[in-house]
Image (tube, rainbow, N blue to C red; front, top):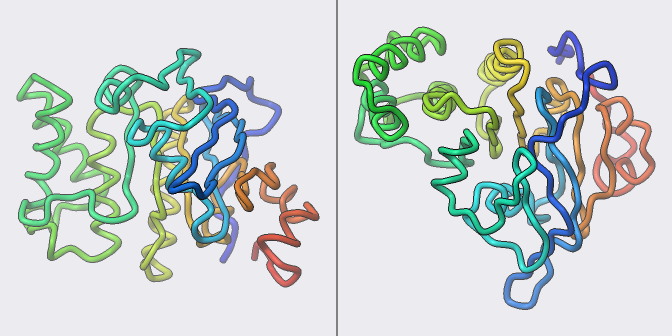
Amino acid sequence: MAIIKKFRITTFKKQINKILLKNISLSYNKRQVLEDISLSFREGEICGLLGPNGVGKSTLFNIIVGLIKPDYGNVSINGKNVTNIPIYERALNFKLSIVPQSGGVFSELTCVNNLIAVGQVTHKDKNLINFKVEKMVSKFSLDAVKNLKAKYLSGGQRKKLCIAMALMSDPKIILMDEPFQGLDIMSTKDLQETITNLQTEDSTRCCIISDHAARDLLAICDRAIILANKKIIAEGSPSELMNNKNAKQIYFGDAFKLS
C-alpha cells in the first residue's frame, strides 16, 4: 500500500506535550503489565502505539482516560496531574475522547440517534446538537445509512460512526484502539484518509492510535512507540523504526517493510 501521509510532523513543529506519562507501573494479580513507563504524546501529532498481544497497549489507553489507576506513576494532561481525576472530568474538562476497540455504538439506535445521544451529554443547545449531527453525517458520508440501526452497518461504516461520535464533543485528544481491525482493503484506506484529515482540520489535535496492523498504522503516523516486555523498546518516525535494531529484533522481524 502506498504511503498515504503527505507530510510528517517532526522537528519543524514546536513540540508541546498534551499527555505526559511518568513512571507508570501496573500489575494484574501479581503479574507486571507495565513497568516504569515514561512517555509523552504531543500536540498536533498522530502517534501510533504498537506491540505484541497482551503487552499493555489497551491498558495504557485505559490509564490515560481514567478507567484504570496505575499502581505507581502520574498522568498529566496539558500540564495538570489528572491521575486522581475521574473519567468524565477528563473527557469534559480536557476534551478527551476514545474510539474503543469493540462496541462504542448503541446497536439498536440509528446512526443519527447515536450521534444525538452523545451530543446530549456534551452540549445543551438543541440547535447546536442538530447542526453537529448533520455535519458529522455529511463529513463521514453516512447519509445513505443515517436512519439505519447501528447493528446493520458494515465494519467500515461502524468505525466511521464511532469516530463521528467521538468528535461530537470537539475533542483535542482522540484515542483509537485498533480502528483497522476487521476492515477490508478499501475500508482501511478510507479510514486512513479520515484520520489524516482530522489532523489537517485541527493542527493542535492529538491522535493516538493502537493497532496490530503495523503497516496501515505507520502509513499515517508522525511518530510511533513500540511496547514489549513491559517497557518501551523503541520510538521514532516510521523510517527511524525501520532502522531500529530493537524494533526489528523484537517486533517487526527482518522481512517487514513499509510498502
